[in-house]
Image 1 (cartoon, rainbow, N blue to C red):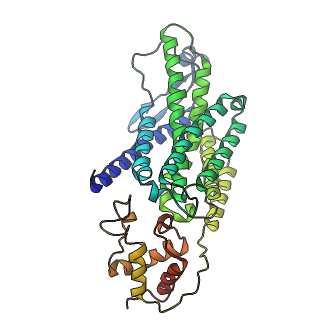
Image 2 (cartoon, rainbow, N blue to C red):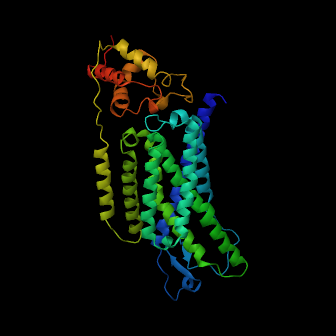
Image 3 (cartoon, rainbow, N blue to C red):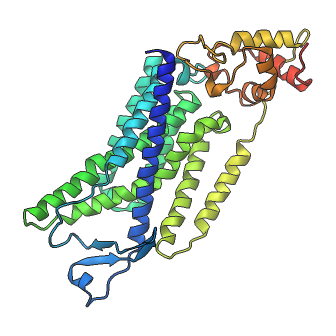
Length: 399
């Protein structure tokens, strides 16, 4: 397939992924809010006699709504039931397609970092795919074990294992790919919760009712537990989706710990909102989350690595030669580096004007965060970084 069509396909898949993710996360947030906001009906009301465990009145868009939740299920099911599943499936399928298009098909560039681990592109893809499968198996077994009956203890263990997963991935893959793969693992757990637990349980409950049997309340309990887990997973997953724009996080020497701190802050903030839906304003949770984020911001501030002394004259011609050898293979209108079909972030460095206009970006990415060249695929040297730094500090002037 022509590279321009491949890029356009990636655009469409990314667009679909974002839209589906909004729908899925939005429904998750709404139903957690709804579940926590329900009030029990008065004992002598029609709702109570029908088996309604909670209800509320809401106004939106000029209309009034009266959602009701039954203790187990209504006495008779309506013919038409709406199933909340395709939002999850579409998000996971589009996200997997995007992962393949952007990372797996370009693993040698996008996933492998020889400074992290000397592995092949195939091994990098195998590590990523293996993480998706293994993370779900371990998580599901934990939920079905005796530990699954203690939500707090289960949450701590799952969080700890996800941190361990991030640690492992950052020791095998480039930082950006490790973050994306960690998010993909969490997203896989979320979608698998819907596909393997929530929807099958709901189908069994519906089938039992239509057969005149009482539904198994265990199916409802398991579905609710996994739904709550998905709700807490949402904010960390969204962060991993946007993390590729913030190299200070994934390029940090302890990038796995940075991800853990941001994930913990996200969970604490989400917990505050879940409690608030019950009328409990536990401000210590967002306060703790803010402290963690503040510390993370301070911790990830740029700390330039000492560079070797520069020998010889530093001028634009020398800098342009380095950039032409180490950067232009990717940052040109028609990249020649294997796996790159368009200049990353749209940055062009193939002309003197482009280099001058992007001098500060060069300093940040090549000298400060050192994230570029990605995975140091073009083998830029420390002295070459020092030459670029010296030229920019001198004013980034043309000869």
